[in-house]
Image 1 (cartoon, rainbow, N blue to C red):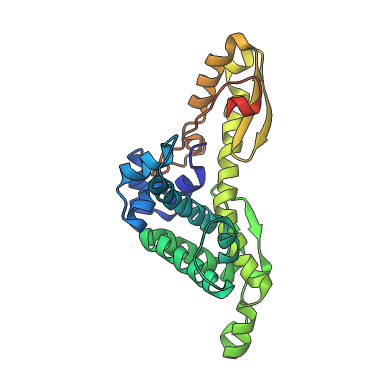
Image 2: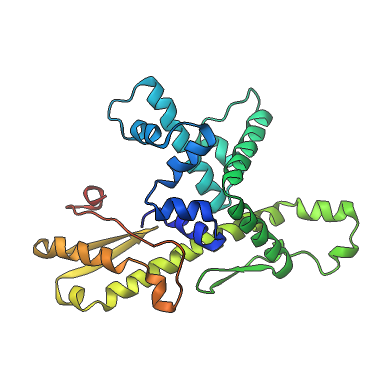
Length: 265
């Protein structure tokens, strides 16, 4: 699926800026890099696609990678510790690199204030209820993230120690992750149901072999390969509409053919 996590977080948060980027057919990570680093969109796009990039293009292309890593990290609930192991973050000491990593996350969220609000509201919901739901209502319980019933009567120091505990912080991160990736899993299941029920795919030698994250791997007779791929891509379009959910962005997929999964990618 095409940028499914970004599409879902844009829709769930109702972030107007990211929604517009997606609906205009733009690469969200390039658009974010343009806002954060000041390079024109087309310049970043050219740098990313360059087969023999110049030294300047290599540096410009890092801007997209940085924004993509930060964006997915926030959606996955990752910390700045994980972030600095994935991209180059300046700093002479670990503390400086961690602080710069935090600032990079905040700069990304500055571009998408509705996503910041969504993340904050999700954390507050966990603290109040101890669980989160996916878009189809599947619940993940996170009891370590729920504040005690007597939280309003706890001392400031006790409340601080509770909310800074490893278990509490992990629940906050896992909760944000569960709403996004859990909803992505919901979408994948609906697509698979469409494929399983489809009369045309049932009529030809075709079978879904495996799901790998947000990809489906299928085996089909070579004679029907092009038509089967075309049909699968059609079935992957906005599957949430089957259950009455209409998002502000379209859910789309791309795909390929090959003798094996690597070739098809």
